[in-house]
Image 1 (tube, rainbow, N blue to C red):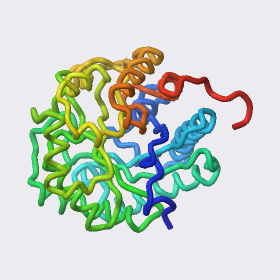
Image 2: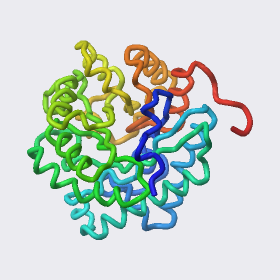
Image 3: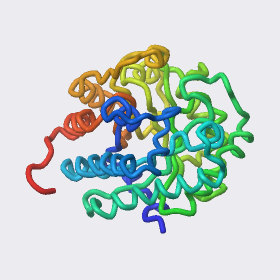
Length: 321
């Protein structure tokens, strides 16, 4: 059974770290081949599964060292019908991968969770399309139907919640929230931003959050931004208002490059971990409810450790946590 589904501990306001750029770490740093940038395919391979376990355990170790909570996302960002079909996975195989991914994180939680470091297991949902583009849009109803099966699978596991990442337009977010509500699963929505602080669809972040809340009865637990540098988030904050209270999380890229530039890059841009930590500190002061912090493309444990140090104002503990 799930541990925190009825009450997500990150909603109490304390700092929760997340993991980082899973796919970029696996491909650029560890040499794994990830077709369609899909990490769930490694669950079937002993070496790949061990690498996934070690990856998530490294962030559990980091959260314990800093005395924070932790939200871990299953490696299932590409485990939806369209991407799965391109990888040779039918609906049954995708459901098996979702369940196996949750089981993997349950192993990590059993080994690393403490009262001071609660570990929330989140079922990771990716966009139907590319993520960097909003050129293949669905209606909210079509998005609900499309993502419902994966969310229902997560609802039957130990997952505490689901989270949709790298969403590029509001309609897909609305459909995902509706599907999660139908499955009685807490859900987080994470939009991605271009360098001007707007979604790839052209919508302002404020508009996307307000519209999603308006059309779903504010059913999402909270909102996040991912796969964008902190300097891409700053323009979005020019608009004040209650929508800021709904923004609880950030998983930023290490690179300041645009999505188009990252698509063309052949080498990893891992930026400057300390500078990224400083930029998180600035955003945290602007958005005090932003308490779920980690990384996205190009980031690893160095970046998340720097974020933790700068936001908490204290180094990691010495010795065993």
